[in-house]
Image 1 (tube, protein in one colour):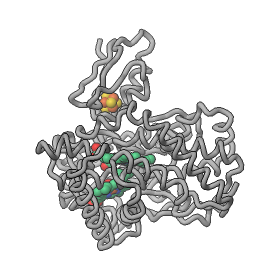
Image 2: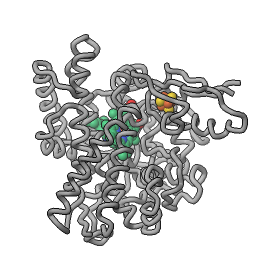
Image 3: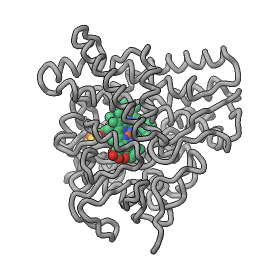
Length: 63
Length: 393
Ligand code: HEM
Ligand code: HEM
Ligand code: SF4
């Protein structure tokens, strides 16, 4: 699975950066940037929980 | 005829939600001060459902259907900024500010916040016990931080602290809040004009250069945004710091756990946020008919999302009434959810971590100098907290 981010929806709350600073960052404009989209097998639930915290539903998992 | 419970209801204990509507979960009708019946959304999943859907559940505070939860909120209708707008209008304004509130930018402020907190504790120690932590500690921390961030002279802090208190507190009357808004607007309008002549290096200066001078915002719009940041940035966080002290002192085993492992500080702050629910509830209105937990919501109906009870929903938080500094749950709705979720949340987290962590480290014998039951509690609704916090050590 891969993490997909929609900058058009992101409102810069930074929840993703708090959850996984090794995976997410914020651009100069304050919008999400995915540093590494690969979700290792077995780690899907942890990332579903992280994605669920995003208040603007800007993040999703894709096959 | 059944009598509906009222919203808001006064808290008996400053960190416990009022118990009066817990039996009506997750969605039920309540009655506001003016007799209007609105939906109280007290379940966690239902609260998120409402807050995630700004098309069906509008934040437009100017709209007559937007419920005023207390008389003072009527006057706030005239203030137009993004907390009271829906997308796409909301999104345009919020994005102008995002670059100043990233996790990186707020973390860069930590050394400054630490120095500020240490300086205030030096003064408290020098004066000796007893200290009132509200004016001596909890208020100045967020107040100085937001002033420096915006580029507002801190010399003027007494003025706007007083005025913004009159805006957000439960007992404020309509006339009083209207006057407070007018005073704050006049002050900010003058400040922004002065900055147009003599630019500084705060967020307001950036917004003048990037937005006002290019036509992205009018000066009046910037005044309303500045007003939001100034009020939003300090009364809430000040309450969270003061009530955080009370909550930790009232849970000595949890305080001991936190003291023995400083790495628990971020999760302890998150649990405090969930448990205290400083913003008791937030309002919306339905723009269309909708289903909500089996109820038929009609277009025009008012909604209050009761943050305090959503944060105690057992479906979302096991043993919800327990205060546990190692819970590690961040899905509370204390900062809201959806597109309006607090833009200042990471700044608030940094301020709470540094203020509470440093206070309990430097004053290990800290305790209340008055019984919990005798602390003056803020009125029902709006921002919750205590007016005074006398402590000794
Ligand atoms: C200058 C800044 C602010 C303005 C202009 C403002 C405006 C308003 C308005 C218009 C309302 C309700 C209006 C109505 O019911 O007709 C309100 C309510 C409220 N505000 Fe503020 N607000 C400000 C800052 C904040 C912030 C940032 C918080 C953070 C928690 C806050 C907490 C609340 C709460 C808890 C309510 C009651 C629920 C609600 O009606 O949404 N206020 N405020
Ligand atoms: C513990 C402290 C704080 C709490 C509990 C809190 C709570 C909230 C809540 C519940 C909302 C959502 C309102 C809604 O959905 O209608 C909100 C929005 C907001 N908060 Fe905070 N807040 C805090 C600190 C701050 C700080 C430090 C700042 C500014 C520096 C700030 C600025 C704002 C702004 C500008 C909004 C409006 C966001 C939008 O509409 O997109 N808040 N806050
Ligand atoms: S959590 Fe969502 S809204 Fe917040 S920065 Fe990440 S993607 Fe953007």
